[in-house]
Amino acid sequence: MKKHILIIAALTLFSCNNSDQNYDASGTFEADEVMVTAKASGTILKLNVEEGQQLTKNQNVGEIDPKTVELQKEQVVASLDAIDQKTNSALPQIQVLESQFNTQNANISVLKEQLQNAVRERNRTANLVREDAATKKQLDDANGIIDVIQKQIAAAQTQLTTLNQQISAAKENVAIQNRAVLSERKPTEKKVEQIDELLKNNTIESPISGMVLTKYSNEGEFATIGKPIFKMANLDLMTLKIFITGDQLPKIKTGQQVKVLLDNGDGKTNEVPGTIYWISSKAEFTPKTIQTKNERANLVYAVKVHVKNNGFLKIGMYADVKF
Image (cartoon, rainbow, N blue to C red; front, side):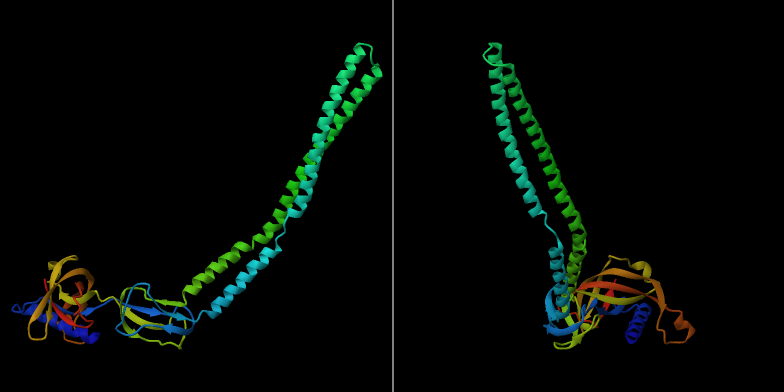
């Protein structure tokens, strides 16, 4: 890399001092390389990548043995089942109380019907007493029967209220007991979700669309977290890194269109468009290995140019730039 910088810098200085040449700076093509590393530890069961292969973003290209993580998930799921078995149900107790409630409700209906009959009988007896066809004692007895039935209805209704309270209390007591048990469920469910996320790490995917540059691992090898598996880059948009001198700096800006000159191999050049997208804010000495004071005074600025790849651009290829 240092050797490349020295060559580029020397070409840059030469271009600044010679007004006859038809370019302003030179550099080499780069690409944003992405190192794909293992996100889990285990044996690589499958790896379908080869150097030079074109991949799409999120493409599944391999798998790391997930057995250990799957066993962890099975253990947590079993814990969830155990939690469910610890919970109590209020249904049997409630069914008994509801049965008593329905019986008492039916009894009240019977008593109300008896009350209606007793009232009719009392009214009939009262009419007979006014006509001296019945005694006052018979009327008192009729009123006594009505009074007894009314008290029986009141007692039955009180019992209904009590049964309702008992049903509510049974539900609440079981809910309180189960709340303590079920409080363990949510954290355990979160553990399952965490393990599901860990299982995703056992899948090897392409993080971007691009070409595989270097393959570091093979099927059957043991991978550890962070171990390189392959390196790739998107070569559709290449970066041409050039160096310019301080007197050239005011002539360029980010977003500026430039001409990129490529050697076609027969002494002629092909011209493709490029766009300046980054200019270094700091200058650096070049070349750094020269010890003379005058040469050490020469400063250059790094500049990066985006160039759309027509299929012929390669990493490390030289090119000239004309502003």
